[in-house]
Length: 409
Image (cartoon, rainbow, N blue to C red; front, side, top):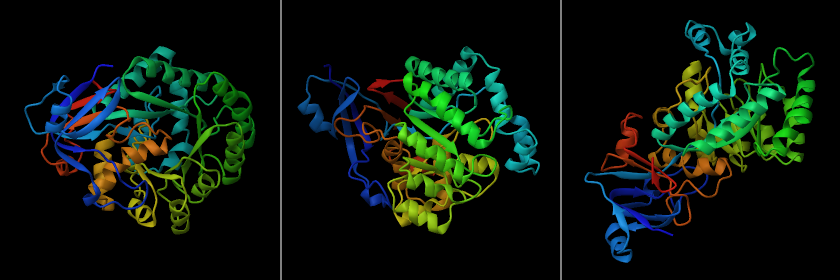
């Protein structure tokens, strides 16, 4: 085991000793001034005062920087759709001209356009697009990224997408976490009912996903234009019995589906732009993470997830991009978190928590999200002497240096 070190660092924000849910004041941040990190084999060994570490590990070679830097854990994006083919620029043009997301979908646009583009793309074409987006995410500080299927919507295409995600994950430094979203919508070319299509997913697609170990997570879109509450409950119950972890596209346009997420012990309920006051209370009292997707709100011109209310009621708030070709094409996590924090009056501590250790929890990952002993050596450096400069620059202050598993990438 070869020990390595970095330092001195103006400020190290470890995100240690922070609550997993509810509000957080900036005074609760653990900040090490003139700090340093020791790591080996991709894992953090110790974080502390640089002079102390330098003396304790006198034989270790330190990477040093000659300017003020702030160090944070690597960011974690828990909800993306970045494996797709084709484009939805026509949808976007229609939307900013006044048509709604649901109107465009009913006219044959929306997700169906991405299904056609993805089905018509080769494995290599999908891999190239995914690789490019994932590397951009990594360069902007995202060291772990969830990626959904859901633009194939038949057995061959869904399995192909999940294979692409797993293949690209083995090629590049960022960790890609695959999720089977075969229950995205009922595809236009499926002859049966919505329930028939869910049976097709449960009987034909998910057993192959399980057998080939392509993903241990499933997602379903429950809302107008997708699947009903009754169909959603039917699917979640069976997917849970099959042994999958679950997450749910919840309460985007209509409320009610976050209740199902709580009932079936979902890791997260994502979207929540239309969540009711009663369901805010229910979700906040559960172990299910509340995932806000500000990029989707920006792309659709709709309200933000009520992040402040969720936190004040005791929820574990996570912020993610929903990076996709239709409603959220931007895909910039730090920019979106900065915008949501300004709109919803989230503290810096709450915002950073929502894209680090609370995000890790939403993916059931216990080995990242904090800069403490035993965690992955995933960390970022920003050219700043004060951590508050990061959100102050509203997403335009990007990481100066990104480290994944103890290697600068």
